Image: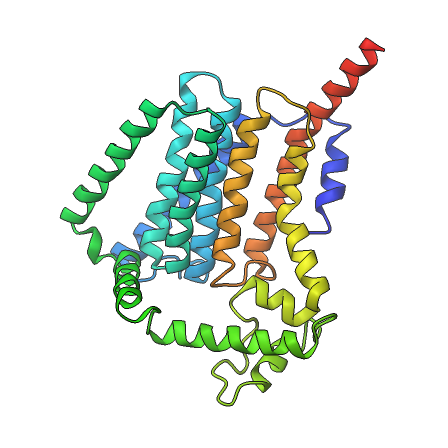
Length: 320
């Protein structure tokens, strides 16, 4: 996170990178996650793909962020080849499904809704196109379930959760129970020290100590970004969390109007929404792989926005 500003500053004195090249690498990386997921699922028989390279949850988180990052190609590539980058979220959806990570499955749906809704509000998508795409998605889902999609771990776990929510109001599995215990402990720890928290090395113990029967002794975090920041650093931590999350969006909003600004707003808003949703059921900040990826997104956004500001300053200078 501390490297974001120096990286963006260094790029201002150099030739900006080709955005299409960046997203091409992103698309290759997302395709690589599919290869890993299929290898784990088909060849090793694992029901949680991604375990061969990382924790399946972190694997799914990075795959999803990488897939939706590819949508930047829709913003900068002006030829018909730009539609190729729509494959990014689709490929990520495959990886997430095989990983069996429920939080990432929910985030995938939320990110799709946010991207489509914001693009529609900005009149970047025609209603006819939106309707045709909606019909295609429904048909694809029906065909997928007919082909056995419901037997894949990720889909199966989400369907069981939905059944539990309809019957009892909350999922009843052990993983959810442990997380709820963590959240309650995190809230108790925050209330005990609401301004400064308990520090980065003591907040989990403080949360565990407040529970009569703690289920998470020895855990490195509370499986929730909000409670992690609240318990470790209090109100100041929550402010920091909000600033971290909104920083890339603020960077784009500060840029002058251009042909790419609205598109960047859609993509960056989608990435932030996904990062937030995934952070509700697992730590995103503090997990090295995911934190580095978020920092990379921030740095890339800063680099892409920098030429827009430079052009605006040149234009103002010429007018003066």
